[in-house]
Length: 223
Length: 223
DNA sequence: GGCAGTTTAAAACGGATGTTTTAATTCTGC
DNA sequence: GCAGAATTAAAACATCCGTTTTAAACTGCC
Image (cartoon, rainbow over all chains, first blue to last red; front, side):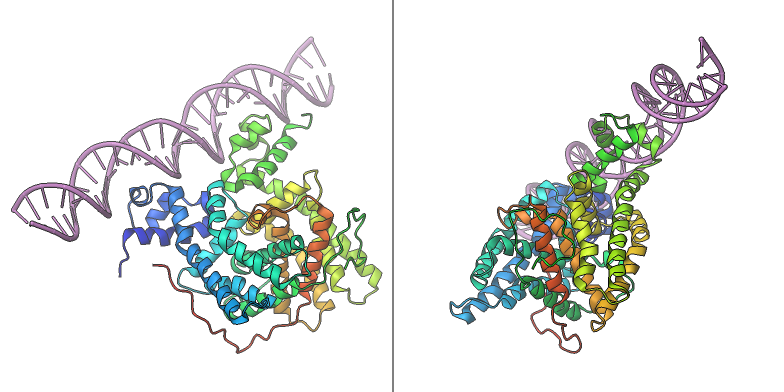
């Protein structure tokens, strides 16, 4: 019933980091919540930064493995043919949002991850890039193959926008409440909602990017 | 070098906050960059929190006024008829992204704003809700009128997703770079790209929410 | 039992933070 | 020119931070 000190610290840190941010979370807050001694953090992890890194790696490695496994499964099924965009979106974002539905820590972690993208400390960005390198390469290749008519730069932007939507879907419940009372307790509903939105955005008509600057973009259609 | 101390502090704070976050930015960093004395912050603003609030209000009030003005213009033009979704999106997100293109401080501020949504300190959320109340009410009404066939809850989620895409479009340049080398220097290109994506997502086919549970392995807990 | 190695406990360290205090300086109206 | 207010300057304040140190308690093994 009592996980060891190391795990309790990781769990407490995860919970507090999503709530107060990287700088706003102190070791004393963590060790108090974990019912551990202050020095235990430096004993088990070496430093606060190393603890934060451990919090991320614990789940992020597994998440990206799941993403690649899902992509693998689709690609085996397709026998060399390009995948449907919907499948690739499912493999990348579906896995993430399903992890975000997991009450057992996954939810907390995904919210933490979402908020970290826009709150980039140097050392976090460094190992984030490391953790993401493979999965990004794989998914970029799959998308480029599936959408040969979409310019790569255009796609990268859309992928970026999709990450933003995912981030808010998962972690922005506070911002969401600005909009009014809304139910965010049904993970299955969130899943289909986000999927629909993402694919709609991904498959939107390509904009015409012109080298000449758009002067005063009134409501004239650019598409 | 000529503006008064108060303005220099606001400008310095804006620059540093977007770079180091709310907790990571210290008063000493701010006053050093502003070439002001440490105590000047507490003299002019009363506290660090009040300074941060002033940084936000200085531009956010104006931004939301612009949004409402844009919406007003469209509604006058429509003479009581529902607006096109594209127009409403333009009024809300277009104004924001155009402000983000403004080199004269607006760019910095919008990145700060974008990263703040997912990094909500209590006192920030409080006055953010206050600043947004009117503009949210106006745009919700306009959207509901323009899209009577879309359930309101569904729309609120899509609006939330759109905010996420906007946030990443503006402030997530670091996360974007995870995807590879990409040019994010052309604000006009970003404008049409984001618009196209947002409207694609907004107008995506409605998902069937009800009883279709997603069956897939649940996220495993990390040990 | 006793002894190594591992883990926890408690206290202290140097440094940085937001804020306050006190004094000097600059500005303003007459 | 000068009193009085507004602003700036410099130092000190208490508090909290991450980390380190020292000692005690526990653990498995002979």
